[in-house]
Length: 110
Image (cartoon, rainbow, N blue to C red; front, side, top):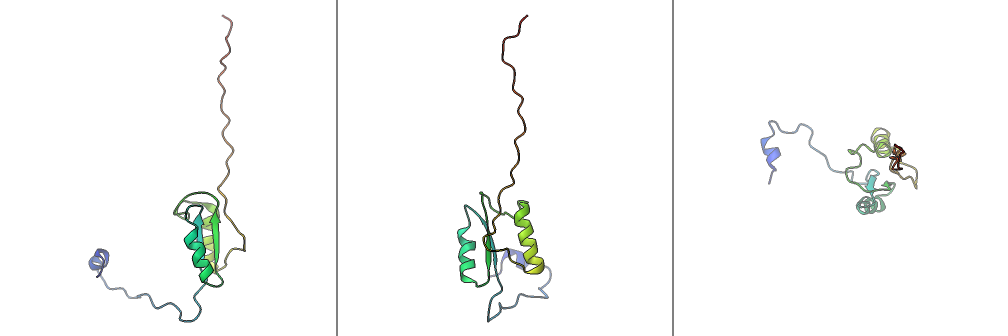
């Protein structure tokens, strides 16, 4: 059954997707955080020559979240099909906390 989006689309696709290669599938780049790394890691184990980048924190939609390390790995893969080195990880950016002003609570002479 066609989806509502395809029913309303004004013109048929001129470049419909073709079948995946029957021989060896292309390598897969998986990305995931602590909370959702299982599925990308499972796909990487099943597709030879693939790699996964764990993000050592929480979150979903890591590429769209603007995480520079994830964006760099994904862009490099999409542009040149270069996968990251084995053992590569992305860590959250560490920011130094802003210094807090400490309010002087000592009694002041009048």
